[in-house]
Image 1 (cartoon, rainbow, N blue to C red):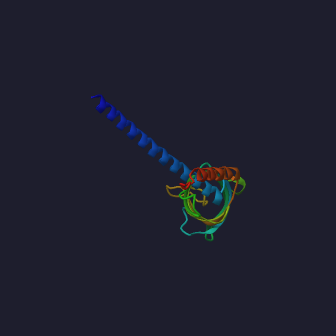
Image 2 (image 1 turned 90 degrees about the vertical axis):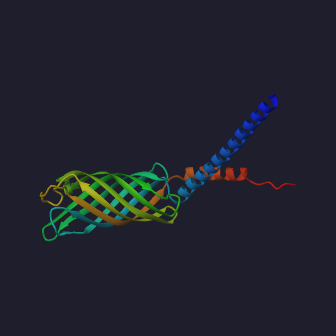
Amino acid sequence: MIFKFNAIVLSVAVTIFCFNSAFSQDSDEKSEKSIERRYAFFNLRGSNAIDIAAGSAMIEGDYPETEFDVYFKIGYKHHITSHLNINFSYHKYNVVVKDIYNEGFMSFDLNLEFLFSPYTKFSPFLYAGSGYNASNYFENTATKAQGGAGFEFIFTEGLGLKLFGEYNYLFTDELDGLVGGESDDVLFRAGLGLHFYFGGNKKKEALRRKMKTVINSNQIIPYK
């Protein structure tokens, strides 16, 4: 009876030991992969970015013959994590209705942006947020909500090229100078831009040291 009890205890102890070893090894592997991915992010991008872009804007309002017109933006991004950043941007654009209306506007936008693949050169992204829209000299103002999607390609360390499209819902029906219908005005913007990444060198160096430590600790010593 004592022999059987000892055998059971021994079996349980061996099982727990094997489970702990496997769990520890799995945790170490996940930790190592996490370090490698974070290092890859800082090797391509950075903690912060200056965002500049140019493209076209067009309103969907009460007039049928609206036109595309050139628009520009400049902004700043800060990465909270590799996947997620918060960004603030200034946009300048015109609302144009053929032979009827041509007015300059600007907007100040705050967004949360999600990168699907921040550890690689090519990454799709999505963003959404809210903003404040105003005509020149702030004679006509309104709040808005916006969302967009695009692609970024890092063609050299710290410099990314992006293509994006954006939907803006304005909480006003006066953007095109005409109040009519039951719905508020909608603005579409699309463009091509650049990200100038900077910051994160200290984090990158710390991750590089961790990677070196992990590699050294996992070296295979040949049996003699």
